[in-house]
Image 1 (cartoon, rainbow, N blue to C red):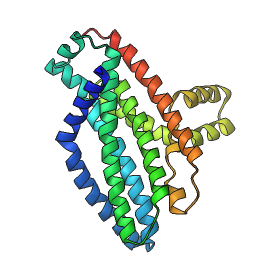
Image 2 (image 1 turned 30 degrees about the horizontal axis):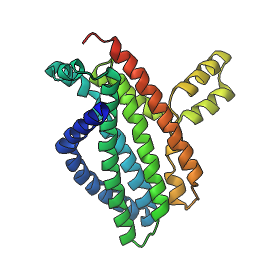
Image 3 (image 1 turned 60 degrees about the vertical axis):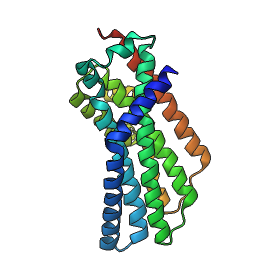
Length: 252
C-alpha cells in the first residue's frame, strides 16, 4: 500500500505538470517529422512507421530522464521527503514508489503516442494492429529499465550527472551486442575480460528495438516479446534493490 500510494502521488505529479503537454507536442512532432521524411524519401508508409516508432522511443527515454533526474534532490532540498520516510515507510518502498510512478506516467505517454501513430497509419491505409501492439509492449519494457536506471543514479549523484550517466548507458545498451562482438574479435585479452564484465552488468536494450522488422513486415513472436519483458523486469528489479541499498546509506 505504501508503494502504491507513493506511485500514485508521483504519477499524478508528473501527469498534471507535463505529460499532456508532452503528448500534444510529441504527437505534432511525430506527424510532422514522419510525413516530411516520407515525402522526401518517397516511401511514406515505411518512413512513417520507422521514424514514428523511433521518435516515440526516444521521447519516452528522454521523459524518464527529465522527470527522474532531479526529483529526489528537489524533495530533499524542499524537505518534503522527511515526512514520508519518517512514517512507517521503508526506503525501499520509497524508491519503488518513485520508480513505478515514473514508469506508469511515461507508459501512459507511450500508449497515447502509439495510438496517435496507429490512427495516422490507418488513415494511410496501413493495418498493423498486432505488430504495433508488440512494439508498444517492448517500448514499455524499455521504459521500465530506463526508469530503474535513472532512479538508481539519482540516489547517490547530482541531477545532471544522473541524466548524463543514464543517457550514456542507454546509448551503450543499444549497441552492447555489437560492441561485445567487435571487442571479442579484435580486442586484447584484458579488454575482452573488461568487455565481458560490462556485457553482463550493463543492460542490453537491443531486444526492445524491433522497429526495422516492423517496417519490413518481419514476424515478431510473442515468445520473443515475453523474454524481453522478463529480462526488463528482472534487470529493473535488481537495479531498484541496489538503489534502495544506496539510499539507505544516505544520512537523511
